[in-house]
Image (tube, rainbow, N blue to C red):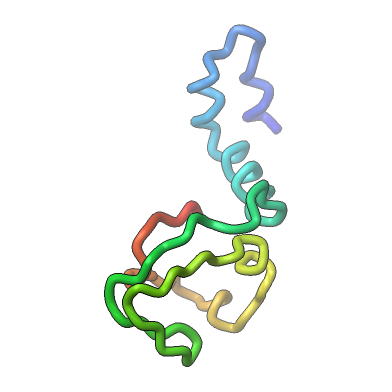
Length: 93
């Protein structure tokens, strides 16, 4: 809460965006309640296996953000972060 007390009517919006706790709360809120349910489609350029399914190049994937955020598996609670390098794109979390 002390972070919010530094904000005044004259505070530059870019400074507000740099507040770490406020940014974390906003990110977590958007993870739990995303404003968009599906990502843009991605076309595979090379073969890939996801959850035992063999996917061939040319297949379009469009993951459901809401489902990904609410489908809990043991791997999501691993002690160390897991780097996902086989899927192109960016992660916000």
